[in-house]
Figure 1: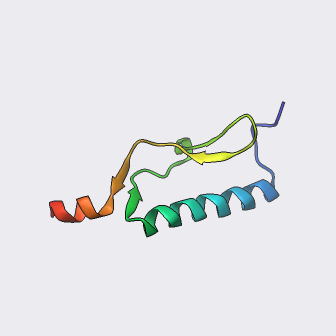
Figure 2: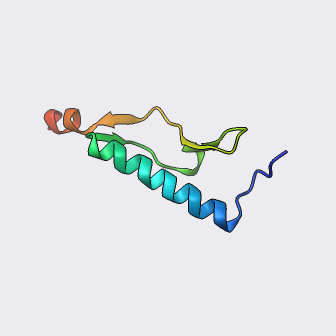
Amino acid sequence: MKSPYFNVEEIERVSRNIYAGISFLHSQGITHGAIRPEAIVRDSDGWVKVACFDIFNRNELLEDK
């Protein structure tokens, strides 16, 4: 069973992957509404995912103003 904790190398990898994923969403006009620790999950294979349902289309938010 994998440890529930990250070592330094995993923290660096996870941080880069989260940044890359969020950057891609932003390039598509999508804004994630709640990046917080409980929105970051690791599956049984060690893959890290941003899991939250507060995802907004930035263009729709701008149109509402």
